[in-house]
Length: 318
Image (tube, rainbow, N blue to C red; front, side):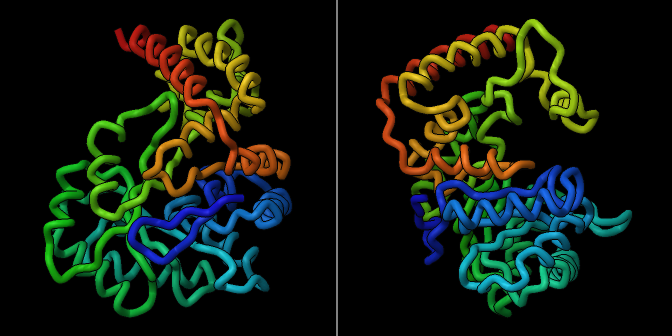
């Protein structure tokens, strides 16, 4: 496993990190989730990402229990705040940030998180209030650093322009061969300001695993068949897109990789990326994905893959 510096922080994070959305504490039994966590550490993964809203606290509770007995400085722990935790608890107001960080720390059974992230931008709260509250979280020692997920570039810049507040060190965007929007504004802005990317959905919700046949219904139990995910994935499940993904398999083979490994290696080809977050329900998935760290791929193979998918996505959007 290779490691990269997270933005302007002093954190060194594994190129592959373990996420817990739709999995731990919710969709994956505790013993299987624990096996995935153990395998992650075995593979050198030191970066664990979660959020208070995952299972309304269930993912944090699982991790709090599962991480007991491990040296706290042996892993980097990140969580998030913004989405509703009850009918009245949501957003990035001063009161919510103060309440939610304490609740997260209690569930995680730790005195601090290494990274506290704004899960989305809160248009109902003044940015100054949010940043001042996050700064107090850092100053109090409850979080070492702060980050954000899916903020518009102009709001990132607005936060950077504020004085006397903690500075962001990370951005968590959706980014993959099937979703390259961050390249337009977010990545250049972050790269110029000491902010690294921590990528979610690097495999396009599993589409880049190649498991979806364009001529058959999605396999039972996959994310494409879940009510929560299927609408979100409609764009990625177009037959032309799925056929294009199948065309990537021989390219990945030429690189000496599986298709998921190739897709993760493409993510890590971007210098501003510090880590790609994987989801796993089985230890063998962790092992396969972790092997994408540190591989050297002929850039022409990446270019060929981009061209194939760009054409397919343009056709699907037409």
